[in-house]
Amino acid sequence: MRLTRLYNLWLHFPFDRPQYTMKTTTRFALTLLMTAAMSSAMAEGGDAAAGQKKAAMCIGCHGIVGYQASFPQIYKVPMISGQGAEYITAALTGYKSGERKHPTMRGIAASLTDQDMADLGAFYASQKGTPAAAAPQPSAQVAELLKKGNCASCHGDNYNKPIAGTYPKLAGQHADYLYVALTAYQAEGKATSGRGNAVMAAQAKPFSHKELKAIAGYIASLPSELTVVPNAKMR
Ligand code: HEC
Ligand code: HEC
Image (cartoon, rainbow, N blue to C red; front, top):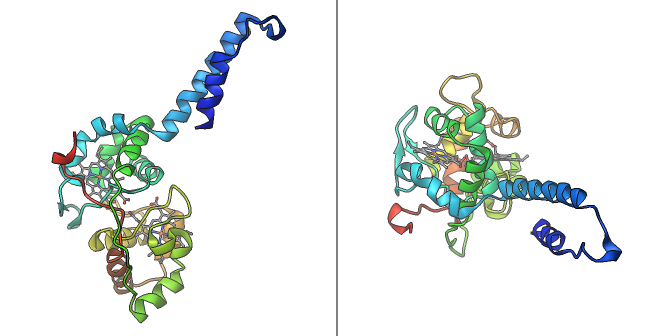
């Protein structure tokens, strides 16, 4: 990190030499400022080791292979190991703010600080799975739908290389979850379901449920960095 280098240079700068005289108070105040900048930069990045400890309250759902949510709909809990750190933080922020309405995740996110979210993002992002080499071809129907939606323009090559950190990797995610997420972007103003993201609302609304199901089924079959890391593998 460049800021870290700058900070180290600052700490080790030979201010005592006559040619660099600088009042102690000024130097002290500037050091305080630099320290503040450093800690906010760390909050952005997140600390995976701290995140691992905070993940204790997540593994009961996200650390169990095939675990299903049962309310308000039945579908597999999304895989978050291997997902991008910034996206995880953004999603958690969405639950906390109420942009995402899922009741359980709202309750959980409400207890997390920005630092907790960044740490959890760093931890889960570090648990990347190894994707299979070859991607299956979509059916002609699905290829047409994906082209119409221009989905790869944001979610990237094989839906696994999003163009921005706050955009999710989709490849290999559970089909039933992808379908529920896509229909959630079509739904606004409901109490216990729906997502208010404006970008994805515009993407999802032109499609029927049947079409979204076909898209979800194909994307779920793609080589994935997403995975589930069960509790036992945690140190
Ligand atoms: C009781 C089960 C449960 C627990 C515990 C739980 N989650 Fe979730 N999580 C879910 C479900 C179900 C969803 C999907 C919600 C939806 O449809 O929007 C979800 C969604 C998410 C998402 C969004 C994934 C995506 O692809 O958009 C993230 C990120 C997440 N959880 C992180 C966490 C973290 C971090 C913790 C621990 C602090 C945690 N969850 C604890 C059940 C749980
Ligand atoms: C203009 C950029 C853009 C395009 C085009 C786009 N997406 Fe997205 N997508 C996003 C963003 C940003 C999010 C995160 C929204 C949020 O925070 O809830 C997202 C989220 C998603 C999610 C939720 C993933 C999860 O883990 O919860 C799915 C599923 C999805 N997109 C599928 C699609 C499909 C299918 C298409 C094509 C029909 C598409 N997207 C087109 C930007 C885009």
